[in-house]
Image (cartoon, rainbow, N blue to C red; front, side, top):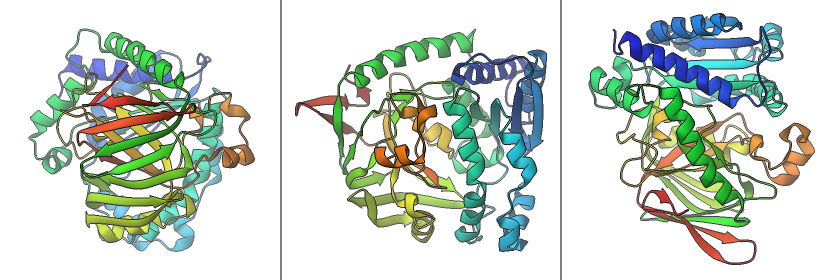
Length: 401
């Protein structure tokens, strides 16, 4: 189904290359290796991205992702040893990757609904070393990644939109109707830099988020910085950090629903004490949420805290896709946290020098899980500074800079 014009597809591909280039801390060398992974539903965009990368001199490894049937059969019929396999070829590829592009176009969001979450967790734990390799290479400036979503009938149906309406939402969010989307992204990048510079200069100790359904606090932690609009996601409007998980307390509430691991989950409520989620519930998908939180020690702890400014994001509908939902603008912007793994590039120094002991000392969370949970309620966010002063940093969906 041709949901975008040929020109829009070219703009989408160029935006992904802008993201991949912007996210890389150092210039790419000649013949750098880039992995492109693409769902079959986005074949046209995948082929175009592949062509652009080859034309720019990259060595490209291209994989189509498993169909829903193949993925379901693997989880259903494999034994624990098969689910725990990490091939030497996977490790060799990731140890030499310079870039990664992921194009998400799911044909199904619910095909794993009846699969035991423990089976999915076993695969996530087995493949975590690959993400550790990626993170270490990124910390050294040797690797970068970006991703996007391509509209499908399944996404549109779950978001209660037509495919045409869903595609229009993506085009609006990603500036595909602009004459030069990459130029527009560069402008947003510049404007977000001013907000990040302001936040990083405040010397914040804790951040308290209050809405009708939550009163939640995180401790920023030692040597932290705020990041965002870095090219990693197309689209991306969030400004985020990875706090010291040990200082998390209070109640967090995700009013926006989500699909994960084949499950539809609605109205997640997490109560934190001494850094850990001690009470977990959901109006729908309650058992699934509890199993994910029990995946490993770090799955019950916070790895990310994020805010999106409604002045940047034009996303104003539930999209049944976390990439778009975590960047929701709408009337009130959004706040989201992720339980699970943290981002060590939020370290205000050289992340490449952080070893395991340093990450632990600084309170960076480690887990095979990373699950974004989104709140779009009207909220007030107050920072308590290290000198004791309180500053409102976000209100009515916008940063107060």
